[in-house]
Length: 584
Image 1: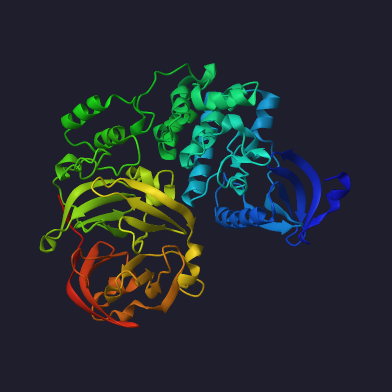
Image 2: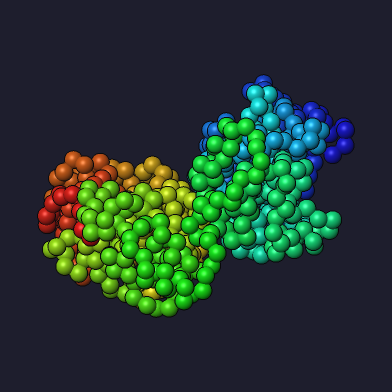
């Protein structure tokens, strides 16, 4: 745009005043919101695409912008609006008047390790807020972090790279993101997740200490090689920050610490005076970050283990080296028994889990009388071969993140599973719902190896089938197959209401067979009890029983029997309610 464009009004509302900067992804202006009478920053996003591809990216942009705009965090720039104007996308954001970290370092030189640790804590908090809604930043670097007058920092431009980053790093206009800050998995077109942003954060912190990325080279090809193959150049003055930076910059995403672990390590460094180098701390990285020994050594270590939840997880990861379900390797060997896994940190494997607040239940495929029960960020696998004896634990509790083939990098799914729906006609495949997103996963026979088949995608894809436009609040709590309809229809539960849904094929389409009604309709079964009338957390068919179901609410469950009656149903209480008790 030329200087005469500074008086251009975008979408009849935003008056452009001053050019603030330009980059590969767009041009930023200072502007005035003439409706609300406030100063804003507005970015013209450079999307090089044809009409059809532009429309696809624009839809994705609007979804991400709506999600990001819901974040209220002091270290995340506020996104106010996203508008289409003259076949271009414009992102309207909070105007932060301070310089970027890149500008600050260029003018005043590198920062001290303690100050860098403090900035790292703020950026970890910002990324945690972004990842919690299922979004990614994709371009964390010093130029995308602004400084407030009070010394705080603000992460900006998150989600913008996603507008062009649909399937790979490359676009007709070049590489999306900044090469020497991009995680290696994105360079090789592997799935990106929160660990990818943490890699970029590690490179950013190095740049604050030295003035340059640890992978900076004179030629782009050399940068690519350095990110993919070479060890990072940790600044000589990093001091006690060095082990944390090395862990964040691990080539393997699974070897990087989580945001919570990285914050735990940075906190004392931010408060302490700067000092010399610290000894390398082997506990910095994730449990899977140890040097990979031979399979023979791992097997020997596994046979020698006696309990210890963390140790058991580490050996499991080393043995798999892929997306296998945590309790079985790709060799097809049988899964460990309950005695091979800890019940909980500090608890004996034989202890009983009482009042378990089940959030979702998933039947094992291929007719096995096993269930996975998800609660919070944990899961257990239970054997229900003898239903009269209740739930007998065979695996767990373990973190949901152990399902690395299905949920790896999906922080919202690793924190909480809301509901599971078997894909009709595809034994071993499931739709899994968490918050405002869903995915499709697969589980192999015998070994229970898990994998991500599709997604994540927005829950809006199910809007017609679930009647979300006029129905319940956002989010699905539970699903249950209608017995006499086989897998052709399902009851969907959300809040204190339910509806009846018929899938169409294997996709997220379908139709609403019966509109949303009160849970009071189930007056002969679970609705006899107040807690169950308010919310159903999980529902699953009793293995081997066509018409019987377990219904979970809070830490209690009931068993009910249901007969389909066309548009209605006939329900009866078999027994309960009782506490959800999983014995070792």
